Length: 261
Image (spheres, rainbow, N blue to C red):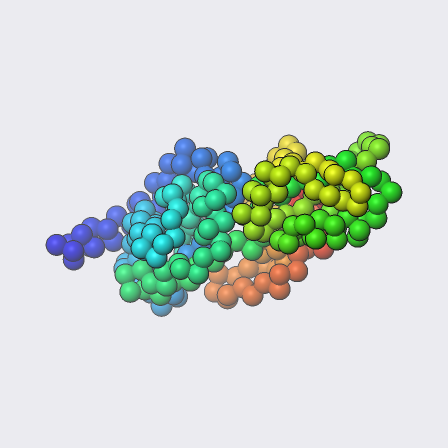
């Protein structure tokens, strides 16, 4: 019966939460796409919450029923009391970020979907070989005249002398991202310049607890901090991020893992 199946699911919750395949984890995070988190109401009976796999399946089916067509989640697990869901392709990620058709309940339990608050590097592009005599503000305006969803347009600083500049920027709209890549070029002033994907340099070891470079979370003794504003996180107190980036490396007004820091 449905009741018996529900009981079996609940009994398996504790053990199944930890049985996440390493290959599944590696496959999902290799795309460098942030995860989505599902928060259950604080007064929910923990024994009534389904396993991670079952909950993700329910969410997937409800999204499909509302016309949100994606592949199945490639990362499913728990981050403390939150359900963690990930995908490994940009199209699915963009759909999930933009849709408001996420479910609001699982088994009658109210849930809150927490979407990523930053744009990953995989949605970044680079306009190359920009003449050095052009002002940065002028280049930014030219990019935004062509690409409406372009954001965080910054000149890339290299450790060696160059005759031209490259500019990195994020593209929030996935269809616009693809259209620009297909076009392959963009007009900056009187120049017709190449557009390419942004490829991050060598990936550094960094901590997802304090967001500093050089160590991992399991060796960190610092308080857990918000990835964006670096305010301390408290399990018992909801965090209200001010969405003002702060760097854990230099205290600058950018994200801690910003490639230009």
